[in-house]
Length: 121
Image 1 (cartoon, rainbow, N blue to C red):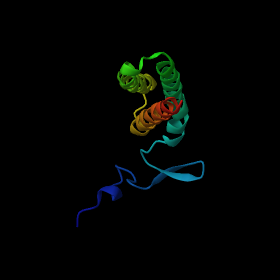
Image 2 (image 1 turned 180 degrees about the horizontal axis):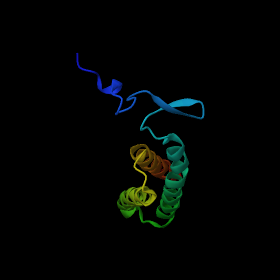
Image 3 (image 1 turned 120 degrees about the vertical axis):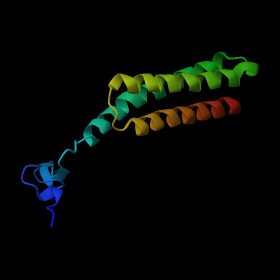
């Protein structure tokens, strides 16, 4: 019978716990990325939301009615570009999709709410 890979004395204990990190077990080769991802969310998401809110209010106040939707689409495109610039500036691949989705969807909701408010006024 051939020995299993995890029982080989030169290769070590594959798949067994290696360390504990703040009360939770960390597997060999696993990094604790939850803290880094949680720390990066506000840093990379909130500035996009603030910029989107400022641009949406400026569009609502300054844009002619015939060009309003063109400017809203440009504002969303600018928010997406700003999102990717901030995500690439962090150089952190873990949580990239969740941060990008949170930032982009938040910008879309902000534009929708500001558009709704200006439609009622």
